[in-house]
Each structure stands twice: as structure tokens, then as C-alpha cells.
Amino acid sequence: MTHLNVLELGADPTGATLSTRALQQAIDRASPGDRVVIPPGRFLTGSLFLKSEMTLWLAEGAVLLGSEQLADYKTIWTRVAGIDMSWPAGIININGCQRVEVAGPGVIDGQGRYWWHRFWGEDEQGGMLADYSARGLRWVVDYECQRPRNLVVYQSENITLRDFTSRESGFWNIHLCYSRDILLTGATVSNSAGPSTDGIDIDSCQRVTVEQCVISCNDDNICVKSGRGLLAQQQAETAREIIIRQCELHKGSGITLGSETSGGIEQVTIEHNCFFGTGVGFRIKSARNRGGWINAIVVRHLTMTDVRFPFLMQLNWFPQYSYASSAASEDFPPHWQAIRQGVEGEAGLTTVADITLRHITATLTTNRFSRAFFIEGCEENPVKNMTFNHITVQAREFGKIAGVENLQFSDVSVTSPALTRDENDTYER
Image (cartoon, rainbow, N blue to C red; front, side):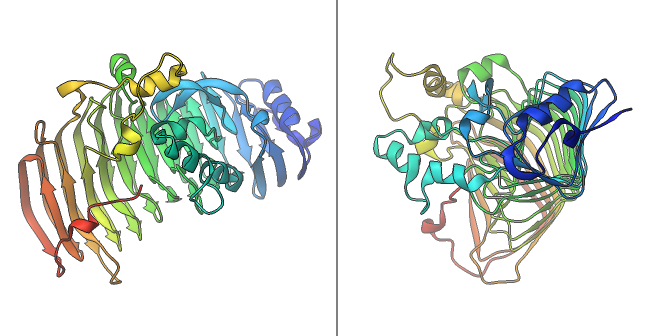
């Protein structure tokens, strides 16, 4: 095994000049089994593309610093929030590869603030979000405002990601898509703010283990997805055989299934995770045009402290984003057409069944708002066979449960001194 140091190819460790070319040259020179080493320093870069049977090692003190110039990210065919389309590549890309490892104590820093300001302005009230929303286009702005991800695994297998830190991503931090046999272990995600800065997204993948990760972000901490709309339903790229265990979740929206469910989500085990001040604990979200299914889900041995919504399930989530409000036009670009092309009628109602939650404790150390249960299924296609067993919850409100068939409580204890109020029927992410 050869160690290829990027400094020998002219990479600038001060971050003053762009090092993409030198970094990519080192990757391209790697033979099977070789290790490309990013040494201590700050290396400004655009998109990098790894290849099969190599290791990218991020040494202690190494920082891959994402460029703030969109032109430095190659436009590629990828998937963005459930839609297959052309979009900027990530900082690190593992596309069509086998047996690749990204490891080490170093950092991938997306310099996200520049990208966040493009989306929602410096005051979070402007930018492209305000412009598109004023024109009735809230449903498409997330796709139009192009923002790089920190690390993307796409159509690859036998991938190991371990021990590095991903921070301040412009969009999702770590995106695993159309891939299988992935181990993600010991990683840290740290995003101070930013729209759609999910921690880890597992998207139409099979046989994925995420373990011992620490995640703080401004959207879903860990999310399982399977595509959005009619095309994703036809592709039937199901997310299955996924384990999420021994992770520590801080700021964010918890461990989520959906909202992209069109290809189906099944055989997911979520166990031995701890939540601290997280917006949500366990979450399911979908919309009435997604279709697909969520079933055979086991959630167990969770500890939640000061979590606002320990159990949040909404099958008509975020209508302004989920449903196109503009009339169809042949002038719409292809990805707009794909977003509009939902699953129609009763087939658009996501089937949710066989959800087991057991040995979960949620406690409060403050008087902040919290709601024990907020479950909104569909009357026409209710959530079926959901079991809560050995559950202890402290919350301000008990909450609401509707659209469920065969809900079973066994050894469930809830303390909720305040009245449940309709004005709290919202969650902002």
C-alpha cells in the first residue's frame, strides 16, 4: 500500500488558493489499496471524485474547505430530495465505486453560511426562499437553490466511512444514495444553522449500518428516504435492512423516516440512541402524493432528554413544500415536472404498518414546551399495528393521536400536566 501525500502534488495547506487539481491528481494516481493522505492544513477545494479500492485519509488537523464558488462543483446527474436531476456534486463524491474508505480524524467543512444566505438571506426571511414563495413556488425553491453536500455516496457498494467530522454543509452533510453495504461509524456532524442541513440521509440504500455517530444540525439528524413521486414509485428502489444504533443526537429533528417514501422503507432497526434537546425523537413524515410504504420498523432502547416531540408522525406533512401550487406548463424544466408528478389518488397515501416502539424513556429537565404524542395518520389509510411497550414519557402536553388502527399501549406511563393546545400542532422542520 502506497501513501500519496497531496502536498507533493502542489496542494496549498494554507487555504489561500484552490487545491482541487492537486487533490484530484493524487486520487487519480492511486492504485488499488493505496491511501491518499490529506495532512494537517486547510485545503480549499471544489468537487473531488474518489475511485474504487482506495482510502482517503483525513489526518488530525486536516480540513477540506469547500469552495464558495458554484463553478468549482461539477454538475452531475444525482438525486436531490427524492428527485433524480442534474445538480452540483459534493465536496467528496464516491460515485459508482466499490471498496472505498474515507477515514481519519480530519474535517470536511462546507463553509455553509454563504450557501444558506443564498437560500434564505442573512435574516432567514429573504433570499431565494422569499422570492420563490412570493410567486407561489415554495414547492420548488429547495431544488432551484443549488448548494453542495459535504459527502455523497452514489451507486456504490462496500463503503466504509469512519471517524471524520462533517461541518457547516451547504445542504445535506452525508448523503448515501442508491448504494449498499455501507458502514458509517464514529463520525461527527456539526452544523450551526442552515436550511436542509440534514446530518445523514440514507436514500434508497440497502444494508446500511450507522453507529456511534454524534450529530447536531438544523434539520433531520438521521433520515431514511426512498424517493419522491411517480418515477421513484416505478423505480421501486426500496430503503431496507438499515440499522441506526448507539448514536448521540443533539440539535436537529431526530431520526426520521420520510418524507420521500415512494420507493418504500422497510426493515429498519433504531436502537440504543440518546437524544439531548432534540426537536424530535422518532419521526415519520410523508404526504398524500408520495405513495410507497413504511413497515417492519423496530425502535427500541432510546433515551430522550428535553425532546420537544418524542413521537411525531405526520402523513400530510408541510403542504407548501409537498404540493405544487402553480398550474402545469410545458415550459417547466424536467425536474419541475418530476416534482409535480406525484402519486395520485389512494395510491398516493403512504401505507404505514407494523411499527414497534419499546423500552423508551423521555424526561424533562426544563419547562420548555413538549408534547408526548403527535400522531396524524390518514383517515382513508390509517397507520396499522403500532405498539408502544415499556414507555415512560414526561412532557408538558399529552398531545394527539388520530388515523391509527390497532394501536396498542403496554406498560406506558405519561406525565403531562398542561392542556393540549391546537396552536401547538406545528413543527417547523
